[in-house]
Amino acid sequence: MNWQVNYALKYLMDNHKDATAQHVRGDAIRIMMPHKPNVMAVISDAYTISAELAMQYHVNFPDMDFLCGYRKECVWEGGAIRYLEGNTIGWGSAGTLGSAIYNGDARSAAHKDYCFSYRLIRQIRSIKNLDREFDRIFTMTLTSGCTVRVGMIMEYEPTADAIRTFWDRFGPIDIAWNINPNGNPTQNAIEAGADLGCEVMKWDELKMLLRNR
Amino acid sequence: MGRVKDAAAEPLMTAREIAKYLLTSCKCLREFKSYMFGSSLFGVGSDIDILIVGPSGEPLSRLKEELRFAGKELPLDVLYMLPEEAKETGFVTSAGCIPLSQLARK
Image (cartoon, each protein chain N blue to C red):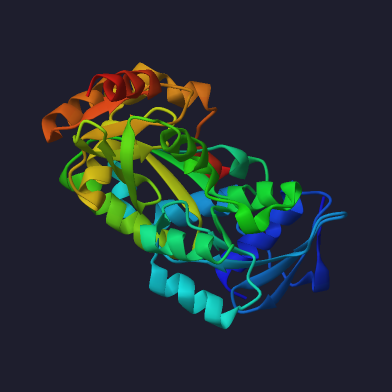
């Protein structure tokens, strides 16, 4: 059994008392919850999930309800997100899967770290166009014509390293949006952002910026 | 507690075993303060939270490389902080971080 499948089974067993889970084959497990639809989840150990990889999983597991990137550092490319959502397949972290089996919405679930913030952005009227490049990166074009590349930073208290690592991995961003409602970026994180050329901010500051640009 | 059908899942490393494994595999950890925090201290969480406190630059790059290799088959979630950030946030205390060296001795 793959290490990530083993972890996923143990995680579900320890944290979801009503669930029954079993290994199906390869990376796939089946999860059963009373009064909820059974879920076929594919547990990936990939560091990056591209559209090609998502399609490959879908070919290998045509009944897949949910694709889980088990590594915490797993990055989802925009093409993979579009493919999965277009095929009504849920996607996201182990935590997302855990919530989805309780809610009975595995097929429509999206990565819980970014879901709420991205939905918030989609509702902003001053944004004319939105291009999701990665799970945590989008470029928005405002009605004023201004284009802004935004990185969503999930850390509770983003550090200087979190900002630098993000920049190194995803390239230049205009705004590092700390989407975790609790905590605040450290002073070193704000300075690291300034050195690189991006502003590290919370929702209130981003909202203000969207109003003014 | 939920059930795993067919008893297919294999035993996972304990917090102590993970601490020992990381301290043995990642020599660069000697240059840093390292801790575990979160649910993996008490059972099985979806990941294993590790805090590293120390310098940035080349030593950090080397450590990241070692941890990436050591964590190839572990769901590590590693948070890196400068010493002044650890002090500013008080994270070690507020998150109940336990030094890896202490866990390994248990």
